[in-house]
Image 1 (cartoon, rainbow, N blue to C red):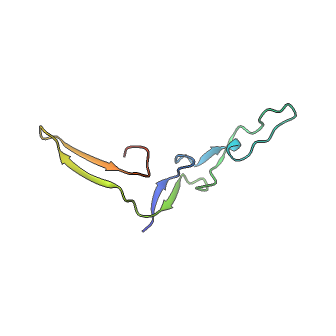
Image 2: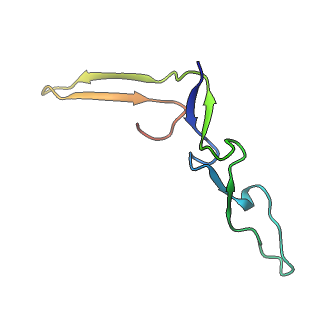
Image 3: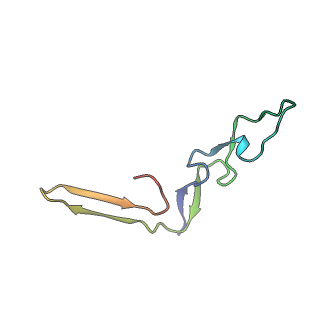
Length: 80
């Protein structure tokens, strides 16, 4: 089953600076494009669909009785 993942190109925002794709120059040679456009990888959705997550999820009891839950995703760079 496919699951959604944060787009690795736009980081889940759904937009990219226009100059990421193309740079147009005006007559002075400076960049002319300085605005956000929809991410082409996720079509502006901020998510991409991929294989089912192979994350490691679970919980453990630490000394002192404190329960810690974890979620380690090799495809995500942020904690959940």
